[in-house]
Length: 188
Image 1 (cartoon, rainbow, N blue to C red):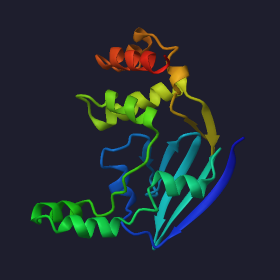
Image 2: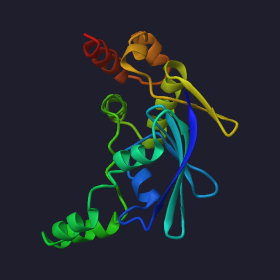
Image 3: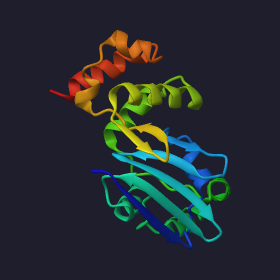
Image 4: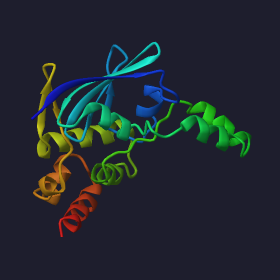
């Protein structure tokens, strides 16, 4: 049963939406005209918007939104301390940390991460996002929210129904056989 929820993170430290969602670590978040981002995480559609000193999350889904955000965005980890410590290594590390000041390392679903990074081989981010979206639309579950359709990432079982040709038709190219083999080996 899907439920609508809201969670407000006040004074977020080391958390910029653009840095986190556009650094290449994830492919299910899309920027909207108002500067917010909408993504699908497990069986939840989440909207994240930074307004002044708050990040406002709203969602429809199965999971408790606050608990999901704390886990997914690694909010219990002290990134400020880690960055201060790593910045002491050398000037290159310090410059890198300053450049990506607001990156949070996402605790993404392992299955989704595995398949997404197979798809990412010798590929570009817009194309990767398109393939994952098509795959999710065909093999994932539909969630309707705010008059838009979103699709969960396909489970191992759902993706196991796809043939190599089915995967090729989604635009995977040479990656189709790798995704097919990985899926088959994961259900054994």
